[in-house]
Length: 150
Image: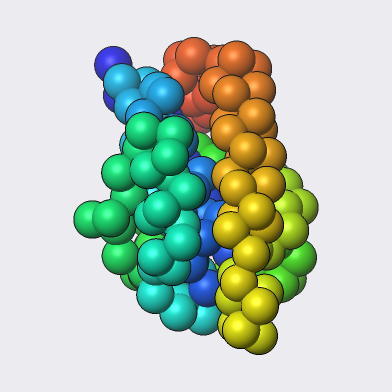
């Protein structure tokens, strides 16, 4: 059976989209192919690695990627997790569905020097809940296929 392909997008591909990718791979990797990217990649945050490790998910091997790496690919879902990515990302006309989950960016505090591991944990926990709901509601692949042209 073909796996459902999902691309998570945020601005820096530093925290939120990386977390979402990690959760989906861990929770339902047998049904989904998960990817993440950013409109302006800034590198994976070490705090992201730390808070994901706290819940048993290793994202230390992830790398920050540009959305440009994925523009020509087909996805069943493109899910933006911030307003900037929602407005700045290129169109994925071949994706079957586009969703938006507004999740507060914990890396904004990190950029100002006011690092708050609690902000990363809050984003992580919100994304875990959204991923769990997404997995429960996601129809089987056969329901996502477009009907053949006549």
